[in-house]
Image (cartoon, each protein chain N blue to C red):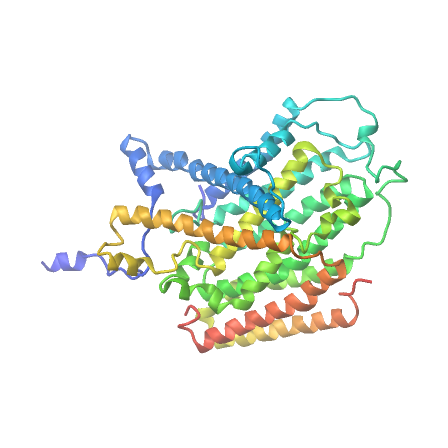
Amino acid sequence: MFVLPGYDAFLGFLLISAAVPVLALVTNKLVSPKSRDGERRLTYESGMEPIGGAWIQFNIRYYMFALVFVIFDVETVFLYPWAVAFSRLGLLAFIEALIFITILVIALAYAWRKGALEWS
Amino acid sequence: MTTAATLSPPPVLEAAVTPGLDLQSGFTTILEGFGLSPAAAHLIWLPLPMLLVLVAAVVGVLVNVWLERKISAAVQQRIGPEYAGALGVLQPLADGLKLLFKEDVIPKRADGLLFTLGPVLVLIPVILSWLVVPFGQNLVISDVGVGIFLWIALSSIQPIGLLMSGYSSNNKYSLLGGLRAAAQSISYEIPLALAVLAVVMMSNSLSTVDIVNQQSGAGILSWNIWRQPVGFVIFWICALAECERLPFDLPEAEEELVAGYQTEYAGMKFALFYLGSYINLVLSALLVAVLYLGGWGFPVPVEWLAGTLGQSVEAPLVQVITGSVGIVMTVLKAYLLVFTAILLRWTLPRVRIDQLLDLGWKFLLPIALVNLLATAGLKLAFPGFFGG
């Protein structure tokens, strides 16, 4: 049924771990008290009546970090097979990875210089 | 005679690794003795370690919460919980039950579906990651091939849940907290993955069991922490940041953001966040133990110890003892780290968001890249010392 060994356990554990929050929430639903609606369902804003909602347009400053993250995350994923097979690949693989990482370090330096990593 | 010689089994190549306790084969053999097919026996076996690990994780969290309260009390020269059970050990259980019986409040202006889905999506990957935590040679739910990489993949699902709950609350504090949480966890994921990469390179395998086996042989001296001191520090800092522990608890910074993305949560949904963050802390500590502190390895090599006592490592009794000692060692190492995490939480002040991002991107990331290349170079230069 499973081509790769051990992944049937993954599927099983996924079901079991998904059952934990579902069971917890269902139990909570059954045993918890219900009260009438009112002030308690008002959005919390330090005791004030909330002024406007939070679903508005505003500047998300982490946007540039997210972009840089995508680059380096993909880099890391590329490096994983290299690291596992490194002992069989030897010096040539080391030089190749060195070039690959150097290019990305230059990209990081560029992003740094351009202020993409600044919080301002 | 010649046929017997050719049929003799090939010499065992991997004699260095002791087989250890194998509960699975023992259990399935007994079931097959009752006339069940191997597949059926396997199916009956499958959920047992999972449920055991789940219970262990929850108990680990309860112990962790109790430790946190007691240690924080000691740090601040208070007594801490003392009425629920001896020394207040039942306090976390009482807290959990209280949360279970609390009313579920969904704000009127929130998005109900995403609001419920957020904490669920935070908790599931954290529990699922326990799949690859080994407590012994065969004491792991499943030694899947991708091993430690599965944990890295799963841990990147968490920010989605955090963003979801921050956004769906329709509360300004929650939104800011959710955005901070996502930014923080993506910033620290890359140095974390690069630190793991250096360990993976030394053991030539992603499997957590292989990573621990590669650290066996000379007891405490062969643990990865001596060969990866920089990686260890990077991993531990990043793990604390991923768990949103002080000094990196900006997403929940109570003085500025009330409780961040958790502001609108109450009752069981809040408990799910709470459970998730503590399971994550125990998990991170366990993984530090597995990756850097020799996992289930005893500080003195077991083979040497058994040899001195005149016992064979293959003897059933010795196997049971080494298996139990292995579990105790893993948990002990993990809780030593949990203890440092708690002490750090109650001694250090919180960093600012720009300091946090600077530390991640301008310090840990370059250092992690250098550490990776240095490991690769040293592995080429001294293959014997860095895992061949």
